[in-house]
Length: 266
Image (cartoon, rainbow, N blue to C red; front, side):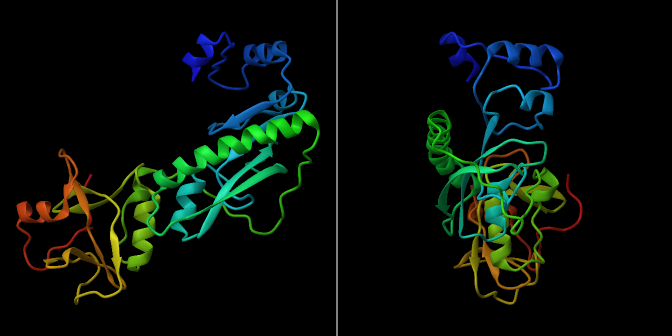
């Protein structure tokens, strides 16, 4: 993005912190009307918020006040939401608390990963942001305060958060795996080593499997959960590429009763 701006002759400011006096002075010199923000990882300080005539407008990938924070799409999928969307709102000192200018909705499909949903929202959200800026320019938009009810938080998801808990029901395991795909990527452990997982397929029944217990048969490579089982599709052992679960199981020569998710593993 910076390279395209340079090529178009647009000034590029890349401060380490939006609090730097040099950045604030340069921002003021630009005399901007409005500052759009997308996926910015820091809070904008009041000294910067006051510079643009019409403030800062943030594009956020949720229907606010739901899922305020760094990972709204991931948390929406993991929570089992059926609909999400994008919102434009005016930045203020709080975390994603400002008044909303516009929204678009997007259904969450039963097999959507966070990557799938983000790709669609990037397109619809871009259109929403342009429409919002146009509405601000012609005076047709009025920001509406977020309701006090329905607030939920979506903190950043770290690698440790993406470890699969097989003591959860199969449909919850499925949602959590899809919610962290492709990043940071769902994982478990097997024989003391990390095993990365592609999206799994939840099954209503479990052929007598305990949580984390593996089974290989005509139905594929299954893992037991607290209720039901999931079918592994692809896995990635440490130091190797992603491969079909059946090929992995064949090479691993699974013993009866072996499990994934045992304690340990880096």
